[in-house]
Image 1 (cartoon, each protein chain N blue to C red):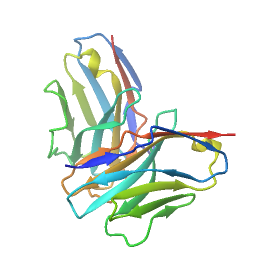
Image 2 (cartoon, chains in turn cyan, orange):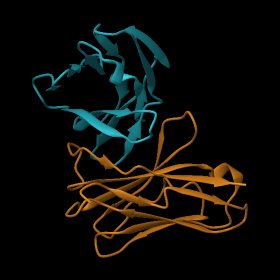
Image 3 (cartoon, chains in turn yellow, orange):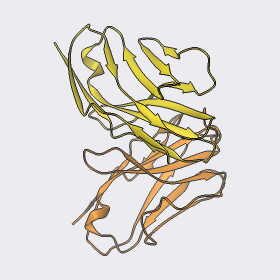
Length: 113
Length: 115
């Protein structure tokens, strides 16, 4: 069965520090995609970063990078130099060839001034 | 507009009434998805469309829920005989095509409240 686990329901981080949000997944399909989305208090879902299961390098998008450890089935999101505007819910999600899309329960990130 | 558009943004209705939620995907996006997000919870996948077809309807919570898509564009999610547990934000997303490496672009959602 497919599963996404985000073990940190909430995190508090000082502004300008780096943040790592944990995500582990479980699937038997060798081909899958991993995504991170940000959901501010306003409610919209914002796509941040994507990692394919066959990608050799970790994905990066500006201050976001995905620490992909395939053998451990983890896909942690790293935010460098955190900003106050990074305060939001963050969701890890997975898709595969079975056309199932599952989201984790999310991590609420609070950036402290 | 350039993004996914959902209407209404808010809907308050009495228990037992039917509601219809609308989603306009990004132009040219062939895949369209519906999710439900209860307060403080993650996203619950409901259904997706590739073109006008919905290959998998198993995510719909009950037979009171139905969805259709026409013209490979607008989709409507209909909830019949609403119950209080249907109260949630209903999010629609679209992607260029249905593939595991395509990011989904979300609308702002419809906040549904059942009295």
